[in-house]
Length: 125
Image 1 (cartoon, one colour):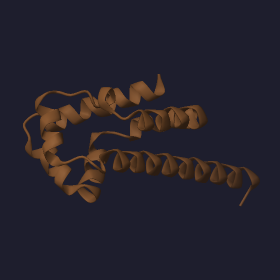
Image 2 (cartoon, one colour; image 1 turned 90 degrees about the vertical axis):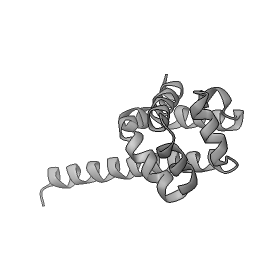
Image 3 (cartoon, one colour; image 1 turned 45 degrees about the vertical axis):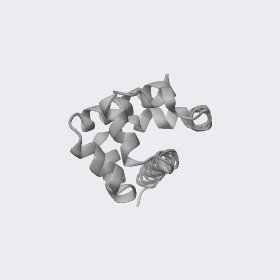
Image 4 (spheres, helix red, strand yellow; image 1 turned 30 degrees about the horizontal axis):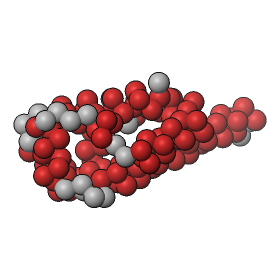
């Protein structure tokens, strides 16, 4: 292997590692924020078009802002990887009752998509 090949490999490895780290942190934050949420709460939020950021606990917002301060440049690079399909897959695995509520409530997926984009904007703006 040439030196440039090793450097390129190391760079790609580092980027993949950082992306994995950010994705896992986001998944953990989602799970933490949902630990006391019941499916009926999600149903009501969808029906009332509740903005999740406006009702998010201050502790969660503070954690998000700390992540932005520490890893903002990295998060900015990978923010497009955090999208509806991935969040739904995580919910299907981690919170199947909430996943079911979202996909079975008319407008649920659209509502969640708006929430994801809004929260990303709030954290990264």
